[in-house]
Image (cartoon, rainbow over all chains, first blue to last red):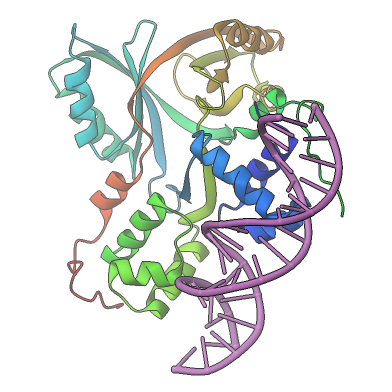
Length: 165
Length: 165
DNA sequence: GGTGAAAGGTCATTAAG
DNA sequence: CTTAATGACCTTTCACC
């Protein structure tokens, strides 16, 4: 379980992943060695899975995104997954419950290009039916911290809150 | 438009956002100053929108995710957006075309907790109908590079020195 | 290219559960 | 007694001018 110090580290690194141990230790108010060991633990536990540069697809010219639900023929999920991997416009894909078997997220530079990508999906031969909804606007940008905050031990669980020397 | 050098930078930083200009210049094979100026341009253009630590929700204990489609009452989108922001389990939300007006992604530590979050969504009063599909497995992990590669000007190779126009 | 500043590692000491 | 945090040391490496 995460405590207040873990959460402070995650919050800081969520804003800027390139902050170093020294800067983190100053902004949070704990020793540098403490920051390092906690970060090591978070990485070893896999809570921090990596440090990534975030790319703005819109600024890169891909202004259209859509959620696509696919119904596929029995037992073809793995084949469809391989097909999806070869289509550049597919940003992510998940197997799901419900009427569709699979939901994927697609990006394109224009509606025409989106249509091309959707046709590529259907051309797979293993796709029985597809329905797509186009994203009009972003209401809540991607975030994970509120969820982590709601689960963190509120200070009583572990020892260290920032203590001034 | 992105060229081969931009793409190489984005690929490297997508793997590890904490690489510095020196290490980038070595792995790509261009001068340090070139890397710095290109990075500056990518950031100024907003293509690189930030450097973030990627958190693994599953490792943090949130093993359940779902896509939720909401139909809402006329003109209540903004009110619903504010409601969604207050619910920690909501990871992201988008206004969409189609039968639903809105699609959001929700995470929870268990099916019980997921149900609690779904109930919180419906309790909003402005939600007419909601349908949710639970994510069973991740078929294609989030990626943007294939799309960027497909659009990059396929000019100079990587061993040759890309020259800025 | 040179320089000042961090990163990364180790360790003895201290405090707390 | 076990676990964690601390501050201080070190060397190497990087970022900025």
